[in-house]
Length: 391
Ligand SMILES: [Zn+2]
Image (tube, rainbow, N blue to C red; front, side):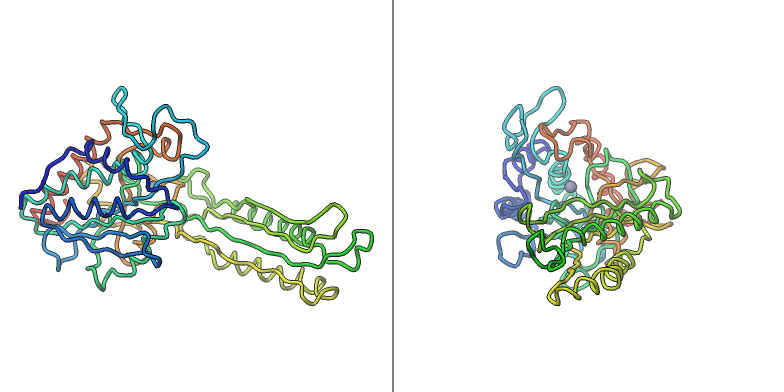
């Protein structure tokens, strides 16, 4: 079937025009992609969110029954609220070789290149299939891709290699940290501050937990370093605190959030256990002597696993071959690569655009990056047609 053929830049303009800020529906964009693929004779399969307002899209070019190479990216973008833009963030604007618009770098530029490559892939007789895996809600904790990953090995053939097209300036990234976020809620007992012994001060308990968190942070810093990362250790930071009612009331409640950026190999469960043990043995007995209803609720709100390809990864080998490079990098930002890797699909991160422009006002991608990505994807087509092992 001879469907329409557009340049990556034309497709990027279309994709940018959909306001897919994470809290909004991505369905108009998904319908556009579904329609575009249908015009090329490619069927899309959707993995909808529970409320049906969003969906991931999965599609295969080439022999569907064989494990192939998945090109993975998210359709959502971060908000523009509070940012000052020189032009409409949802209208692609070209200035001096740069394409401006929300999501140009992170990561509609990659999606546009993939869609532009589709007619080229169809002209080849692919021996190895190429899958498109477009997800949602990445920017709010890699949420949307998880139900899609759950279908791998079932409804969808588990890919042999997953290329995650987050902006790396087309460098090959084989490791990243994993962000884990905790919510802690401390419940004490309110009392007049002049009658302090009748109350349980939730803020004071938060202070004790903060001291324990600082000790854990020191221990993480003292662990063997991985100099490929900047900083070369796992960080732990209390990031939000909110408690108390009035200046003359012993606070009944305090909420505390903290965030760990884990290196590959850091034991998240051990950190969680450590804080729970501290709360149970060092805080709660004193609290409950005064107020049996007192409690400390500790919960992991979101966890994106760190990513390490391991040595001799076919995904990394293939990406280096396609990019014509021989060096890999580690980054501190997170992607869904760790989730794919954990699900049994070797992953690698390589995509157009610079992470420095992601999430900023006047986000842009260099046209030269789009060209580089198209060359990379063309080489993938050649390779998939040959069906040869990587070399
Ligand atoms: Zn992204």
